[in-house]
Image 1: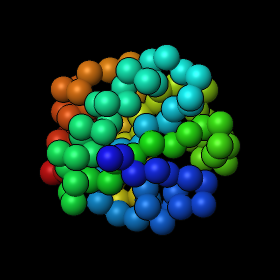
Image 2: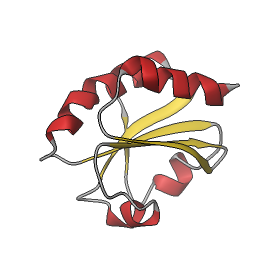
Image 3: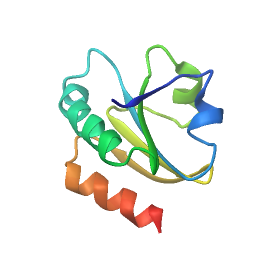
Length: 105
């Protein structure tokens, strides 16, 4: 199961170091529902290596504003606390996994 990011825990989890993947989504977003199983699969496969989770933008506007989230789904990838990649829109598991592997090295 993917981690649940919030405005309150974001800095201590997504920005703590290592690689973090944040899926910015909302309940009403159809493409977000399509990418959700991909995020859950990646969270399971990379458990202990990468922090992978979801951020509900309707409930967590501080992070949404900070990273200028205007369209969803948006996937943010952080490495050692810095935003290193951003993907807006629906994507494949292979594409996300490729981005994760790039930043793990």
